[in-house]
Image (cartoon, each protein chain N blue to C red):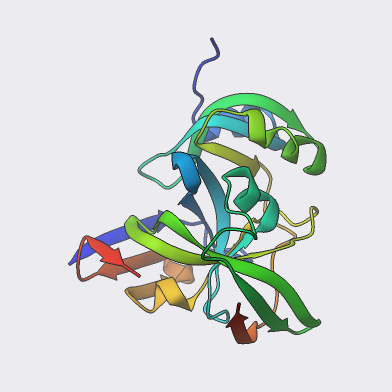
Length: 80
Length: 140
């Protein structure tokens, strides 16, 4: 059985990669840890594996965030 | 009053926090979301919602229509049995599920529906991001 890794260990072992974690957890410093079950440079192939990973699942990028959201979302409407 | 604190470098372009989302049958996903005071609702990748069985055909699902700087986007909203973010629980909290480009490194945003319930302090030069809650638990 694989070991649970802390965020610093994950980032050191899989720099600038997407990492799929099962049995994930949040540490006191709000960093994420868990058991690494897959990793890679692209998110999409790993996304399809989330369903089979043990809950709580996380799919995280270990590098700096360079492509996030931008702008303002407004005029939110909800309707059935 | 309870306090939640995040370690930051102070140079981040986005401040990203973990958000634990519980769907049907108790399955959970730990998403990474950006703090976004410019968005009134909390948005999550559709694929994540589907991984924990929060589907568009959920009995309490509603259409979600968001308008952003590049135009409108349609998704759906659905109540998650539990959302845990900023050290705080929200039960039966409605999240908005929208398709988010796979190249983006965050899974969504935590919006004003959460932020307005606490007192958020962001002092990036001092590397301080804190939120204070009046109670230890909240029901949205």
